[in-house]
Image (cartoon, rainbow, N blue to C red; front, side, top):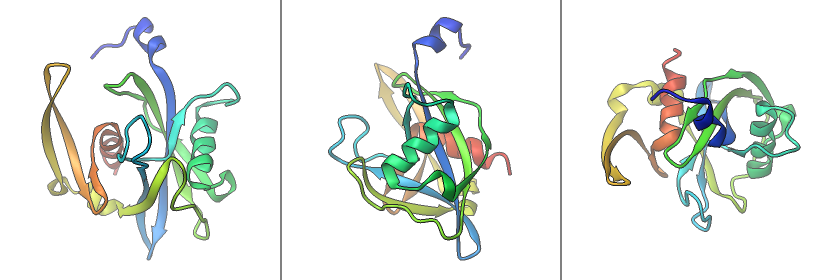
Length: 171
């Protein structure tokens, strides 16, 4: 879908961190399962992140700040590797994914007010096309097809799934 300047300015700006963690000498991505108590996207699988706030100096700062607020992973425990192209969501957000390598000894909180729990998935599993399925549903009366990946904690789908596929396509 072609973007017009007006369309981009009406989207809510946000950023997520794609945390790459080492588990037993294998690259994994760290995900969050959102709290079921949240009014927006309850119980969904996501990356840590959120809306740009006035104090954020740039989009990277947004991703890092939100990650620390949500799961306690600090800036000093990760190294930003780059930024992927932004994407639009069906719910009116423009999400900029920020890729970061997480230090071996880093710690994070498994639960917070926003996060029910955190978990990792091996990058090689996320990279295999056979592990993905297409799901069909209706949004605002129109048929929509989205790819999804079943985790032990629920379905990874929507914008997060698109970001994962965008990231794994780089390898």
